[in-house]
Length: 212
Image (cartoon, rainbow, N blue to C red; front, side):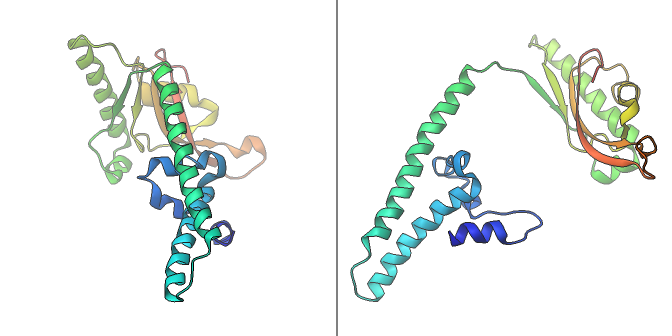
């Protein structure tokens, strides 16, 4: 309880949980779909309490309290068993799910260059997308279902009221490939009674004919 309370109450700009230390032990973290990261942390804490009880009992030359030992072993074993079952269930669902061929495009430009040369960054992503499509066609491979551009490909903000036209001319410029990219979007507050535009992050998805 103390461990969960501390993780809930302690202020962090970027939340970090003790359960992150188990990220390589997949069966032990599947319980997060029931109790979240704090639930995984509780299992970890209980296991450590059991180990501490063994060490303290030895130092005090007494028999360890079986309740703590049983609780720790049961928590680990139960969590691991649940994790193995859940992994198999999810793998089965993934195997039976429809599949898509996804292209990933990232231009060779750093964050500073993307800001200085925003139009060039978009052009390079567009050219790389066309090259990807042409390469697959030349090798007789199925076309991609959609292409994902890297974070920061679009530096300038998209006006919400004119998003369709803006994306069509400033981003796609005739590109006939389903696309997913991120960009800032601004909303003109003049139409909403405000003095300053509201800016927020947006994930855009466009169809082969350029519709958002």
